[in-house]
Image (cartoon, rainbow, N blue to C red; front, side, top):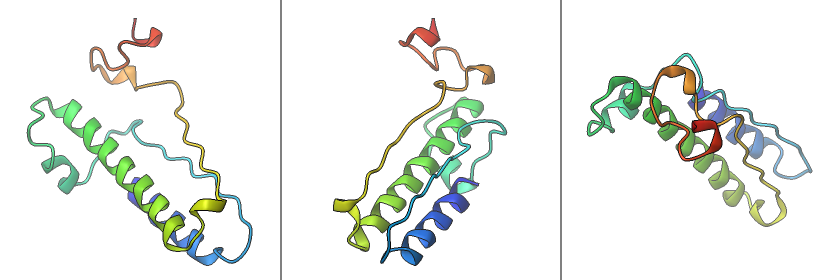
Length: 109
């Protein structure tokens, strides 16, 4: 889903590059269900814990997607006239059972 949302955002930027537009891109990663592409999962072979590895692979996809969106803005000459706000919701998904996921924030205590 992360890759799909990123790809669609890049298409929307290209389609609207010559007029003002607003985009609200709300990724669902890294929330449940924990799913990652095989390529992202395998790229993180140094992480032994399966759940942590899938979670990290989802973050990897999210990072790549945001990079693609920013690159599209740059490619179309929009980066100097665009406001990008990146926000997260309530921290890491503590409910997946990864100890210390939100440390050292208050939510992790």
